[in-house]
Image (cartoon, rainbow, N blue to C red; front, side, top):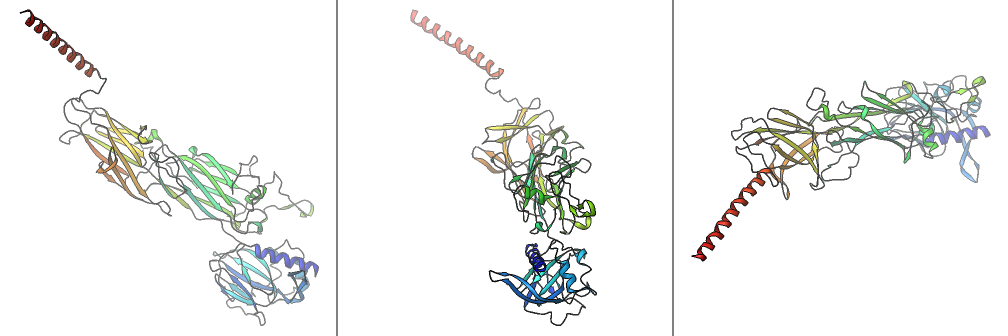
Length: 542
């Protein structure tokens, strides 16, 4: 009775600690529900569960308190064989088996119960009533794969069945900034726009399920597939955390003390794997249940040297540059991640600093759905024309990105020139200044033009879209309602014509022409002064 008391208490603890998940209550279809099983105790499954739970009665019997000092500690009185007990098995068999509270695997229990005789089959939102007893719950996922089993000691109260499969929630995010007006990045979001050459911040985030402590070890792997616009070789500034604790890479590949990083240039992707994230979290003093694991890094958008060529992998406009990622995680608490070793396999391997846990196979791990983020970028097309709107070659333009209220400017050298067409690639939202530093022969240079590019795109969305793009000419007070050319949101392009008029624009202050003008003017003024003085002297003399 003492041993059974230990195992039933441990079984209850296992049941309480299991991760809650959705389900529905229904008695087993085409199965005979035994007389006397229905009782005052309720077994229920959360309404959001997509899994199925078969409930088997191993033992039945009365319940009494062990001690008045601890009313919650209860044991069976005169246990009897349950309805679901396998043929040839007895109460003593169950009591002997239950003496080892650490064993709860469905595969081990399989010989002790009759799988054709569940007392109920529960799904999301279902509830059944049962008598006091010792029950086994076998959980099956939506794909009809039996993954695990939980042992329940049902006493004089209601029990919520919690999923022991558990599920990792995963998301990928990125940050944005208008570097003309802002100094801080946005919060983590799904859509952003950036300049070519920007080191774009990304984040992978996994929230572990509530039942990680039910696992001997817990496998977690991130797979990040970058868009071709982001070469995986540019991934830098990697920071990995569990909660607020920084995790370092393994010094021994496959060890349970950190993570393994693998880059695949052929698929332009990388993987980051925790052979045992449970062990890592516990070593950092973090409870593994519901722990949050984050990976932050930067990757450079595009290649400035490749714009306008066949090697330009950047997509401009509404389609954007999509980046996807997903997580792979353990889904079976019964998986033997640290096999027993030694004579007779009776010595269990310890989890020391050099341990290499086993990797769950496909039947013992699961993938999350892919999550994606999108980076948008734009281009400006300048067409040089004469007064008759005919193409005019020979100009030289420079485009600057302005920041700090126009105090600072950065030259945009991502440009191609095709006759009279100047295309500037990979622009973000922000303020710009276009200058014509050399006009075609016989034509005046234009005055500098300042304009503001604004974009609206989804910030938090499963499939972010670029919804608006504008370019407005600025005056001293800021952007006006005057458009800087025409905009194509789908193509992410801003196109305008710059007209030159014939004639030569006077040189600016400090030019050689100005000096000559001053010299000639000064000389004529001097001669006029001399003539006037001479005339006055002659008049006095006469």
